[in-house]
Image: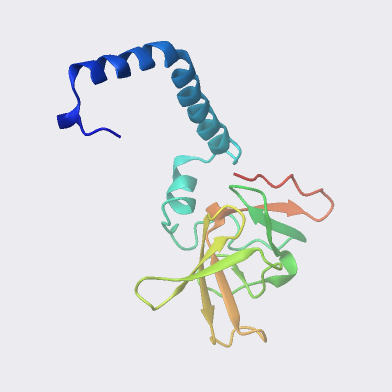
Length: 170
């Protein structure tokens, strides 16, 4: 790069000619990058503003309001954003906390990240990074001594007799 202060009129004209000559190529490359970005955003499931608030911006839904808090059918809970399987209904239990609770995740389904306050551990979908909720250990609520406390807005339920949808990747 040439510092602007050192550029003379001839240099500026040379750059102007280069841009004019290559304008369509430059414009195409910029537009292609924009399209690729838009397509990757569209690869995930569309979210409502409330779902986005929880999944993307790491908010928490109010307790005892989620559709899966008091829900006990046989099947699989998947990530609402990307369809990755996260929990089976066999691992769901009533913790009485107001959110769906699970004592086991499917292998490699969840990523655990210490909260900045050091008090809790956040859980995210390992595929898309969507916020699911928090993990609590040593509460003695199940034999596994683990509670994955999950926002209903972060998950969807797929009944056992239905096939799982295709996992969406960025």
